Image (spheres, rainbow, N blue to C red):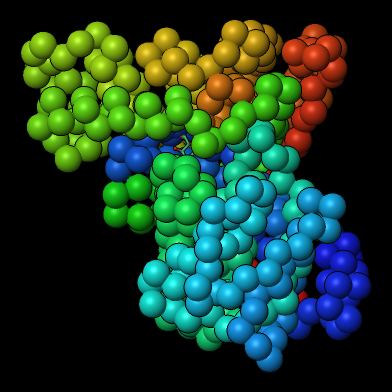
Length: 381
Ligand code: GAF
């Protein structure tokens, strides 16, 4: 990819880029739809990433080349950037520039080329990796040394929320900016504290793409957010993070059944996530498999964000693994991927099973990604 993006840059701008930056996609191990409820998440960065090649220009223009969109080009003035473009990729770039401007940071002109290998529409955060790679690059090119990786994440999230039109939480961007190699990151989405939780070398991370594409700018995602906010309001708390299961029961009052189930998923998922961080750090795969199965059941029955095909895939993987690994849908839902944490000696058997027995809705064998927990965004050259 470095070669590909460097060559494309050279061809478009006639010179080598002066710097290259990379930011990874992520897979969430557990803690789904908890981030925007101020709760806990446990994602890890994956070894699939977006690379940004960049050089400064003598004028105020920002020229951008998208290698994965047929070398499509964009050009804008970061001081007066206009975001609503018909091509979605342009809004991701312009949105990050606009977020810098909104925060009072003037960006100088630059030549940019972008390439990535995070599968798109898979729930593996290709957009967050693009946003964070750009934020990391723009910060360094403009000597904004006081900005931290958490700021890069917040800038990329602001771009999604205010310019792309996706009401996502902070998980994807934060792990893309702050992940540590070999570890998952336990993030408190209220304080933004993040603690690495080492993944033992005996445990493998396998991602299986269901073949059902998903888009995040999605009314169902926003609807879940809204339902959670309403439930929090009913309980008189700032966010569902502030409730435990006992309080949920005790103060349920006249809360309708649907809102109650939505809230129950979030409250129980927060507890499961803290529990899973403990289990992961002590290498307790048996406990992890129980927690991942419970997380999936809760997404299926209470939060209603899974699909029958994904439920079938998770059940098949879970039955096969027993106590030697866990599987659950990962990400925003309504399609995308299943993640499994598997005892390494059971990995080949699991891959074989999925390869032989699961078919995507269009009849193909599923794509699988065996991942290494990777580090967050950085300058790579
Ligand atoms: C998507 C969002 F972008 C995240 O913020 C998070 O809410 C996730 O869905 C669900 O856990 O990835």
